[in-house]
Amino acid sequence: MKVACVNIKSRTGELVPISALIVPTIATPLRNAVKLNTTQLPYLSGLPLAHPITQDDSFKISLLIGTDYYWDLVEDHIRRNGPTAMSSKLGYFLSGPLPTEHSLITHTNAFHVAAHHSTNCDFKQFWELESTGTTSTLDTNTDKTFLIECSNTYVSRQSDGSYCAKLPWKPHHPHCQPTMTSIRRGRGPLAQTPELLQAYNNIIMDQLKRGFIEKVPTITDNPNTTHYILHHCIKKNSITTPIQIVYDCSCQQSCHHPSLNDCLLTRPHFLNDLYSILLRFRSDNYATSTDIEKAFLHATLHETDRDYTWFFWLKDVVDPKGQFEVYRFKRVLFGAVSSLYATLYYHLQQNNTPVSCDILDNLYVDNALSGSSETEIIHYYNSARMLLSDACFNLRAWVTNSPQLRAITQQERTSDTATPSNTLAIFWDPVSDHLNLASKGPSTTGTLLTTKRELLQESSKVFDPLGIATPVTIQAKLLIQKIWMKQIERDSPLDQI
Image 1: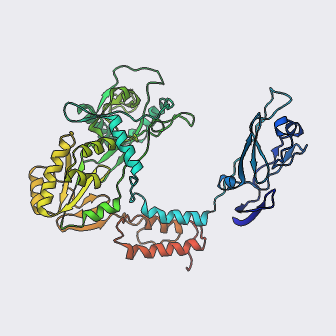
Image 2 (image 1 turned 60 degrees about the vertical axis):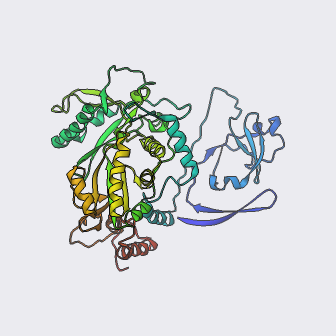
Image 3 (image 1 turned 135 degrees about the vertical axis):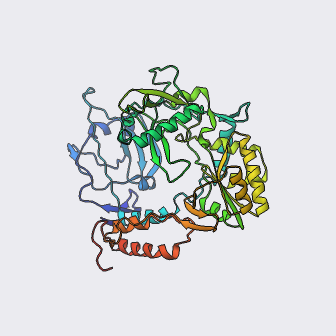
């Protein structure tokens, strides 16, 4: 696709430069709705219009100006009394309803143009992908102020020390509609995998037993007070959690109906900077890693919001084509954008100690990392467990390179038995104190990579937020850069480069 620099000449002779994409056809001819009778309206009389008025039935578009240049052309003066006239450097733009001779007959013209200059855009996105998930989303004072206000408004302490949280509804939010398609999705691939289905059922029954969910006492059909959530599972490389159930609170019944997340306040996402966490984690001789057990299920969901978290599950797991039962959450669920961060933030802020500040700075989702001397790391272990157990959170799967702390965690059965341990997508062997990068094996063993797509797939398998393997991975990036500049298609064979 070719790019040209075009100068638009205004009514005063000023030249407005714009960068334009050249396409064969912008749109099909549009019906000319602005006729001479429109210009005869009193408040439009004598106005120099940007589009010339003709009696032609249709006209072709030769230049389409997008919103990136629109505000360089428009001016402040506006006239309204039917069609709206807005002044610009090219003349007055008309928009809005037009007078017609037959009021019952309406005409609609709609067109859409999508142009994408792929070479630079895709190339930029490829390099920006390196920072995905490694930069903080909680950098500004505005975000922190919002988080404090959210904590004070939606979070309350219960008699046992745990927390109760309300869903942070948007002001004047629309009603989220029941997502009945969850019934159809519930009968998907699970029915073909009995082992997976049983593991799925075990998790739900465990959540029911532990009071995280409950059967809906009374089924109602009021779409304004109920909402069904879709769910599915993903496999994990973990001994403690082989599969994880994901609740899709962003699913819409249709494009005209909002999801649950659409109705909730979303800002911010409260992620600390992964790069900084990992650097601090390895800045001392001794380090430790832990995660909060079922973190998103230890904050109670307020009674008034529970009917918006209904979901279906099988009445009899042996019969995957049988009837469903309806459950709802009693605890804050992971899939909602509100999640539990306001609760954790509130609790750690209320207990302003060096350990709480350390956790607050080094918490990533539900994983907490820390590094210090061996004496201090044992103190951190005891203090952190006591601090979070006070809010009914349990720190488990402790990993450390400290022999003393490792012995304590093994004796108290709080240690992670996996070796090496998955520490924020970096594999750590605490005994040898070696870090290993997470990377999947090649898709085509013993076969040369012959296309740009294959080269991209293989080079993207190495997750290296600290840049440890850069001397090796940079070679693949340079090769990809060279291929991209030659504008080779993704599936075209790679010849001599």
